[in-house]
Image (tube, rainbow, N blue to C red; front, side, top):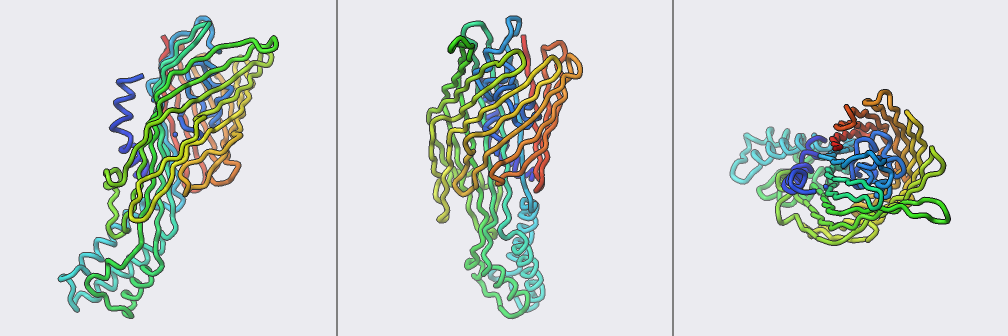
Length: 414
């Protein structure tokens, strides 16, 4: 499955990595961003993010900066999560080898009766490969982010740029192809030149990469005598869609990003959030990401077409915090949608951070899909923050169906 994520990383590399270094950056984990501290704590963060990472989870929390807090820079946060229950990507590589052997023998002008036992063996091997990948699916998400947060008493603000993407691969295998190839292997069907053109099994790949460029601002108001913070992030949103459809007999992973399979769209969107403290130890938060709904259609390729859905994701959260311990609970009130061909998910996460030393933090959590369409994961990680100037955070996720993920993040405060 690393190959799928490698593919996703290659999709984003031309635009993401220049952005990381030259400009002020999701599934996807549960949302549309990766944050090593939050992801280690079960994907929480709506009420528990620090002021320097609040722009990713809930911009209202930027007001929680203390008077002596300094400018915070995320440079960068990057993560991925993959699910490959049936090890489809490895099987596709094996299938490609079998296809090449079969085509070499069965191609027009290369076949004679002396080759018949060889073509039977190649056809039988190919039929077996197709049988094993029929209906298999694999998916992966990856993301990266860069942010600069400038705290102050009146109007803290942040510049944020992030990219998040999803890829989904399906093996659409025709039973008629398996029957034909098995017939060749059994000797009941004699292969003729040109028969390969009648085979219809296909490899289908869907991918989307979304780039957000935004400026977040926050302010604390007094509502009925109680302080409540609000934050908003208007953003430019650039989306690239990939719709790869090819016969499994001509499948080439390197073709995924070619122009005939790709289209793009640019629009406007907005994130918002609210937060308030209940006493000294409790914080309530509410996050709303992508408040403007958008339906973006892929190109139609070989009769296949899909729609990528950007929808509001509203998440309330609560955190409890004392000197050494922070716990958090987030529950999505709305589902996370992706392509129409994929089932939606709706997440709940719980996590905790224990500050073992002034410079060492330990974290753990659990994230579940309440719709049971995505794999539930156990999360863990740690943070190192010498002199409270450099912050290195690492997180890992592990679940069933060969699901795993990792996030790394580097923050500076000065």
